[in-house]
Image (tube, rainbow, N blue to C red; front, side):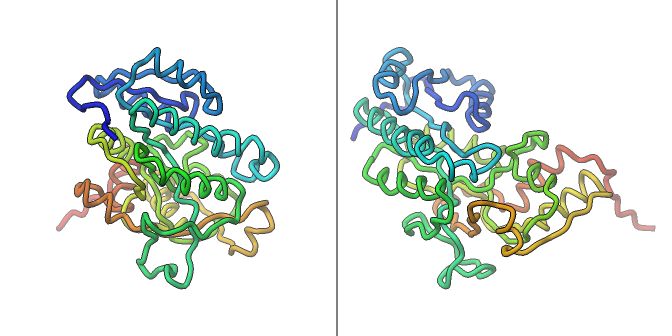
Length: 302
Protein backbone atom coordinates (compact mmCIF):
# COMPACT_ATOMS: atom_id res chain seq x y z
CA UNK A 1 0.00 0.00 0.00
CA UNK A 2 1.13 3.54 -0.75
CA UNK A 3 0.56 5.91 2.16
CA UNK A 4 0.45 9.68 2.11
CA UNK A 5 3.81 11.39 1.80
CA UNK A 6 5.24 12.73 5.05
CA UNK A 7 6.31 15.85 3.08
CA UNK A 8 2.75 17.22 3.16
CA UNK A 9 1.75 19.19 6.29
CA UNK A 10 0.66 16.86 9.06
CA UNK A 11 -3.05 16.79 9.77
CA UNK A 12 -4.23 14.30 12.39
CA UNK A 13 -7.71 12.90 12.91
CA UNK A 14 -7.97 11.67 16.51
CA UNK A 15 -10.66 9.46 18.04
CA UNK A 16 -11.04 9.49 21.80
CA UNK A 17 -11.55 13.19 22.56
CA UNK A 18 -12.96 12.56 26.05
CA UNK A 19 -10.38 9.92 26.92
CA UNK A 20 -7.11 10.33 28.76
CA UNK A 21 -4.76 9.48 25.87
CA UNK A 22 -6.91 11.32 23.32
CA UNK A 23 -6.78 14.49 25.41
CA UNK A 24 -3.01 14.27 25.82
CA UNK A 25 -2.54 13.73 22.07
CA UNK A 26 -4.32 17.03 21.39
CA UNK A 27 -1.93 18.83 23.74
CA UNK A 28 1.09 17.25 22.03
CA UNK A 29 -0.20 18.35 18.63
CA UNK A 30 -0.63 21.89 19.94
CA UNK A 31 2.90 21.93 21.35
CA UNK A 32 4.29 20.75 17.98
CA UNK A 33 2.02 23.00 15.87
CA UNK A 34 0.41 19.97 14.21
CA UNK A 35 -3.10 20.45 12.83
CA UNK A 36 -5.54 18.04 14.45
CA UNK A 37 -9.26 17.39 14.67
CA UNK A 38 -11.18 15.12 16.99
CA UNK A 39 -13.42 12.71 15.14
CA UNK A 40 -17.13 13.07 15.86
CA UNK A 41 -18.18 9.76 14.28
CA UNK A 42 -18.93 6.57 16.17
CA UNK A 43 -16.30 3.91 15.59
CA UNK A 44 -18.90 1.25 14.81
CA UNK A 45 -20.67 3.53 12.29
CA UNK A 46 -18.81 3.29 8.98
CA UNK A 47 -20.69 6.17 7.32
CA UNK A 48 -19.77 8.61 10.12
CA UNK A 49 -16.09 7.66 9.88
CA UNK A 50 -16.10 8.19 6.12
CA UNK A 51 -17.73 11.58 6.67
CA UNK A 52 -15.05 12.55 9.23
CA UNK A 53 -12.25 11.64 6.84
CA UNK A 54 -13.90 13.53 3.97
CA UNK A 55 -14.29 16.64 6.16
CA UNK A 56 -10.81 16.58 7.70
CA UNK A 57 -8.69 15.04 4.90
CA UNK A 58 -6.13 13.79 7.43
CA UNK A 59 -2.59 12.55 6.81
CA UNK A 60 -2.87 10.10 9.74
CA UNK A 61 -5.60 8.73 12.00
CA UNK A 62 -5.18 7.94 15.71
CA UNK A 63 -7.50 5.68 17.67
CA UNK A 64 -7.44 6.39 21.40
CA UNK A 65 -11.11 5.47 21.83
CA UNK A 66 -12.22 2.25 23.43
CA UNK A 67 -14.02 0.68 26.33
CA UNK A 68 -11.87 -0.03 29.37
CA UNK A 69 -14.74 0.09 31.85
CA UNK A 70 -15.44 2.41 34.76
CA UNK A 71 -14.15 2.32 37.38
CA UNK A 72 -12.16 -0.61 35.96
CA UNK A 73 -12.24 -3.57 33.57
CA UNK A 74 -14.67 -5.48 35.78
CA UNK A 75 -17.40 -3.35 34.11
CA UNK A 76 -16.74 -5.18 30.84
CA UNK A 77 -17.70 -8.51 32.41
CA UNK A 78 -21.33 -7.36 32.69
CA UNK A 79 -21.37 -5.20 29.53
CA UNK A 80 -20.02 -7.62 26.95
CA UNK A 81 -21.98 -6.42 23.92
CA UNK A 82 -21.01 -2.78 24.52
CA UNK A 83 -17.38 -3.86 24.91
CA UNK A 84 -17.45 -5.82 21.63
CA UNK A 85 -19.19 -2.99 19.80
CA UNK A 86 -16.40 -0.52 20.49
CA UNK A 87 -13.28 -2.62 21.05
CA UNK A 88 -13.83 -5.10 18.22
CA UNK A 89 -16.43 -3.89 15.71
CA UNK A 90 -15.47 -0.22 16.08
CA UNK A 91 -11.71 -0.68 15.88
CA UNK A 92 -11.96 -3.01 12.88
CA UNK A 93 -14.33 -0.65 11.08
CA UNK A 94 -11.95 2.28 11.58
CA UNK A 95 -8.96 0.22 10.39
CA UNK A 96 -10.92 -0.91 7.32
CA UNK A 97 -12.08 2.60 6.39
CA UNK A 98 -8.53 3.94 6.84
CA UNK A 99 -7.13 1.21 4.60
CA UNK A 100 -9.71 2.02 1.95
CA UNK A 101 -8.59 5.66 2.08
CA UNK A 102 -4.85 4.86 2.09
CA UNK A 103 -4.35 6.14 5.64
CA UNK A 104 -2.19 4.85 8.47
CA UNK A 105 -4.06 4.18 11.70
CA UNK A 106 -2.10 4.47 14.94
CA UNK A 107 -4.08 2.28 17.32
CA UNK A 108 -3.51 2.48 21.08
CA UNK A 109 -4.05 -1.12 22.14
CA UNK A 110 -3.07 -3.06 25.26
CA UNK A 111 -0.29 -5.33 26.43
CA UNK A 112 -2.63 -6.78 29.05
CA UNK A 113 -3.11 -9.84 26.84
CA UNK A 114 -0.23 -11.81 28.35
CA UNK A 115 0.60 -13.36 31.71
CA UNK A 116 3.82 -14.80 33.06
CA UNK A 117 4.28 -18.45 32.05
CA UNK A 118 6.99 -21.14 32.05
CA UNK A 119 8.74 -19.56 29.05
CA UNK A 120 8.38 -16.00 30.39
CA UNK A 121 8.82 -16.40 34.12
CA UNK A 122 8.40 -13.58 36.61
CA UNK A 123 11.80 -12.01 37.27
CA UNK A 124 13.52 -13.84 34.40
CA UNK A 125 13.88 -10.74 32.23
CA UNK A 126 12.44 -12.72 29.31
CA UNK A 127 9.61 -10.62 27.92
CA UNK A 128 6.83 -11.34 25.46
CA UNK A 129 7.71 -10.26 21.92
CA UNK A 130 5.49 -8.58 19.31
CA UNK A 131 4.98 -11.83 17.42
CA UNK A 132 3.96 -13.86 20.49
CA UNK A 133 0.33 -14.98 20.68
CA UNK A 134 -1.72 -13.72 23.65
CA UNK A 135 -1.98 -16.20 26.52
CA UNK A 136 -4.16 -14.22 28.95
CA UNK A 137 -7.94 -14.43 28.63
CA UNK A 138 -8.79 -13.88 32.29
CA UNK A 139 -10.87 -10.77 31.66
CA UNK A 140 -13.41 -10.14 28.90
CA UNK A 141 -11.70 -6.82 28.19
CA UNK A 142 -8.39 -8.58 27.48
CA UNK A 143 -10.18 -11.23 25.44
CA UNK A 144 -11.67 -8.61 23.08
CA UNK A 145 -8.33 -6.84 22.78
CA UNK A 146 -6.56 -10.09 21.87
CA UNK A 147 -9.25 -10.87 19.27
CA UNK A 148 -8.93 -7.53 17.55
CA UNK A 149 -5.12 -7.53 17.62
CA UNK A 150 -5.09 -10.87 15.80
CA UNK A 151 -7.46 -9.57 13.12
CA UNK A 152 -5.58 -6.26 12.73
CA UNK A 153 -2.44 -8.19 11.73
CA UNK A 154 -4.08 -8.49 8.32
CA UNK A 155 -4.21 -4.70 7.89
CA UNK A 156 -0.90 -3.36 6.60
CA UNK A 157 -1.92 0.22 7.41
CA UNK A 158 -2.22 -0.24 11.18
CA UNK A 159 0.38 0.54 13.84
CA UNK A 160 -0.70 -1.32 16.98
CA UNK A 161 0.79 0.04 20.22
CA UNK A 162 0.56 -2.28 23.22
CA UNK A 163 0.15 0.08 26.19
CA UNK A 164 0.38 -1.26 29.76
CA UNK A 165 -0.55 0.20 33.14
CA UNK A 166 -0.27 3.78 31.84
CA UNK A 167 1.32 6.42 34.05
CA UNK A 168 1.57 10.18 33.55
CA UNK A 169 2.87 13.17 35.48
CA UNK A 170 -0.73 14.13 36.29
CA UNK A 171 -1.11 12.44 39.66
CA UNK A 172 -4.68 13.75 40.01
CA UNK A 173 -5.94 11.66 37.08
CA UNK A 174 -7.94 8.68 38.38
CA UNK A 175 -6.83 6.58 35.35
CA UNK A 176 -3.16 7.00 36.29
CA UNK A 177 -1.73 3.70 37.58
CA UNK A 178 0.08 5.52 40.42
CA UNK A 179 -3.06 7.40 41.46
CA UNK A 180 -5.07 4.18 41.38
CA UNK A 181 -2.75 2.07 43.51
CA UNK A 182 -1.96 4.89 45.95
CA UNK A 183 -5.68 4.97 46.80
CA UNK A 184 -6.14 1.23 47.17
CA UNK A 185 -6.45 -0.22 50.64
CA UNK A 186 -4.14 -3.07 49.65
CA UNK A 187 -1.98 -3.75 46.60
CA UNK A 188 -0.31 -6.79 45.10
CA UNK A 189 3.43 -6.56 44.52
CA UNK A 190 4.32 -7.90 41.08
CA UNK A 191 6.89 -6.58 38.59
CA UNK A 192 5.24 -5.39 35.37
CA UNK A 193 5.99 -3.55 32.17
CA UNK A 194 4.43 -0.08 32.21
CA UNK A 195 3.96 2.90 29.88
CA UNK A 196 5.08 6.41 30.87
CA UNK A 197 2.79 8.51 28.68
CA UNK A 198 4.82 11.72 29.01
CA UNK A 199 7.72 9.98 27.25
CA UNK A 200 5.92 7.55 24.97
CA UNK A 201 3.00 9.54 23.54
CA UNK A 202 5.36 11.99 21.75
CA UNK A 203 7.15 8.91 20.40
CA UNK A 204 3.84 7.63 18.98
CA UNK A 205 3.47 10.93 17.10
CA UNK A 206 6.99 10.46 15.73
CA UNK A 207 6.05 6.91 14.70
CA UNK A 208 3.19 8.35 12.65
CA UNK A 209 5.59 10.81 11.02
CA UNK A 210 7.80 7.84 10.08
CA UNK A 211 4.75 5.91 8.78
CA UNK A 212 5.60 2.91 10.96
CA UNK A 213 3.13 0.01 10.95
CA UNK A 214 2.84 -3.37 12.66
CA UNK A 215 2.78 -4.27 16.35
CA UNK A 216 4.99 -2.56 18.93
CA UNK A 217 5.28 -3.32 22.63
CA UNK A 218 4.66 0.25 23.76
CA UNK A 219 6.20 0.27 27.23
CA UNK A 220 9.41 1.51 28.77
CA UNK A 221 12.15 -1.13 28.91
CA UNK A 222 12.30 -3.29 32.01
CA UNK A 223 9.86 -3.89 34.83
CA UNK A 224 8.83 -2.17 38.03
CA UNK A 225 6.80 -3.57 40.91
CA UNK A 226 3.89 -1.97 42.75
CA UNK A 227 6.03 -1.59 45.87
CA UNK A 228 8.87 0.07 43.94
CA UNK A 229 6.42 2.61 42.50
CA UNK A 230 4.94 3.32 45.92
CA UNK A 231 8.42 3.62 47.48
CA UNK A 232 9.16 6.37 44.92
CA UNK A 233 5.82 7.96 45.76
CA UNK A 234 6.78 8.01 49.43
CA UNK A 235 10.26 9.35 48.66
CA UNK A 236 9.15 12.18 46.35
CA UNK A 237 5.56 12.98 47.30
CA UNK A 238 4.50 11.90 50.78
CA UNK A 239 7.02 10.62 53.36
CA UNK A 240 4.18 9.58 55.68
CA UNK A 241 2.52 7.36 53.04
CA UNK A 242 2.04 3.72 53.99
CA UNK A 243 0.47 0.75 52.22
CA UNK A 244 -0.32 -2.90 52.72
CA UNK A 245 0.29 -5.80 50.36
CA UNK A 246 -1.84 -8.81 49.66
CA UNK A 247 -1.35 -11.81 47.37
CA UNK A 248 -3.17 -12.76 44.17
CA UNK A 249 -5.47 -15.16 46.02
CA UNK A 250 -6.56 -12.37 48.37
CA UNK A 251 -6.90 -9.94 45.46
CA UNK A 252 -9.16 -12.39 43.61
CA UNK A 253 -11.74 -12.03 46.39
CA UNK A 254 -12.24 -8.31 45.74
CA UNK A 255 -12.17 -8.23 41.92
CA UNK A 256 -14.45 -9.87 39.39
CA UNK A 257 -11.96 -10.58 36.60
CA UNK A 258 -8.32 -11.63 37.04
CA UNK A 259 -5.65 -9.09 36.05
CA UNK A 260 -2.76 -9.49 33.64
CA UNK A 261 0.83 -9.41 34.92
CA UNK A 262 3.70 -9.59 32.47
CA UNK A 263 6.94 -8.23 31.06
CA UNK A 264 7.03 -7.12 27.43
CA UNK A 265 10.20 -7.22 25.32
CA UNK A 266 10.89 -3.67 24.05
CA UNK A 267 13.83 -4.43 21.75
CA UNK A 268 11.86 -3.43 18.62
CA UNK A 269 10.80 -0.04 20.00
CA UNK A 270 14.21 0.66 21.57
CA UNK A 271 15.92 -0.10 18.24
CA UNK A 272 13.72 2.52 16.54
CA UNK A 273 14.07 4.98 19.44
CA UNK A 274 17.44 4.37 21.19
CA UNK A 275 16.86 7.34 23.52
CA UNK A 276 13.96 5.54 25.24
CA UNK A 277 14.51 5.46 29.02
CA UNK A 278 14.09 2.40 31.23
CA UNK A 279 10.90 2.32 33.28
CA UNK A 280 12.57 3.37 36.54
CA UNK A 281 14.55 6.21 34.91
CA UNK A 282 11.43 7.42 33.11
CA UNK A 283 9.35 7.32 36.30
CA UNK A 284 11.82 9.57 38.08
CA UNK A 285 12.43 11.99 35.18
CA UNK A 286 8.87 12.43 33.88
CA UNK A 287 6.66 11.72 36.89
CA UNK A 288 8.29 12.03 40.28
CA UNK A 289 10.86 14.81 39.81
CA UNK A 290 8.29 17.25 38.31
CA UNK A 291 5.88 16.45 41.16
CA UNK A 292 8.44 16.42 43.99
CA UNK A 293 7.00 17.67 47.27
CA UNK A 294 9.77 16.47 49.56
CA UNK A 295 13.00 18.44 49.99
CA UNK A 296 15.96 17.40 47.85
CA UNK A 297 18.48 15.47 49.93
CA UNK A 298 21.92 17.01 49.46
CA UNK A 299 24.93 14.83 50.13
CA UNK A 300 27.36 17.35 51.60
CA UNK A 301 30.90 16.27 52.37
CA UNK A 302 32.31 17.75 55.56
